Length: 113
Ligand code: DGP
Image (cartoon, rainbow, N blue to C red):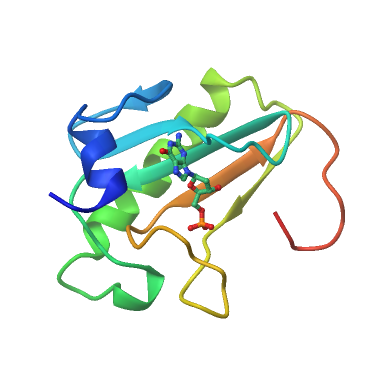
C-alpha cells in the first residue's frame, strides 16, 4: 500500500486520531496551520475532489456528515473552515482526498490554509 493516508487509516503509520467511523477517519495535521487543524478523509481511496462521481460520492457525503462531529469534538463552537486542495495548481501534496478542518481561532480572511 503506497498511499500515505491509506497507511495512516490502516494504522501502519501513527496519527493523532480525532474521530473514526466505518467510512471516515479524522486525524490531526502533522503541520498545523491553525490552533485546530484536522484532516477528515474517506477510508476508501479517492484521489481528489476531481475524482468524485456518482459511484463514490456517498463516501464524500459520509465525510461531510462526520465534519460536524469532528467540530464538536474539537469544540469549534464559533465556526471553522473546510478546505480541499486539488491537483498541482491546488497544491495537493497527498493524493487521497482530504478535507482540512481549520479553526480554534479567528482565521485570516484570505482562502489560503
Ligand atoms: P494537502 O497539501 O492539501 O495535500 O495537505 C496534506 C496535509 O497532510 C498537509 O497539511 C500535511 C499533512 N500530512 C502530510 N503527511 C502527514 C503525516 O504523515 N501525518 C499527518 N498527520 N499529516 C500529514
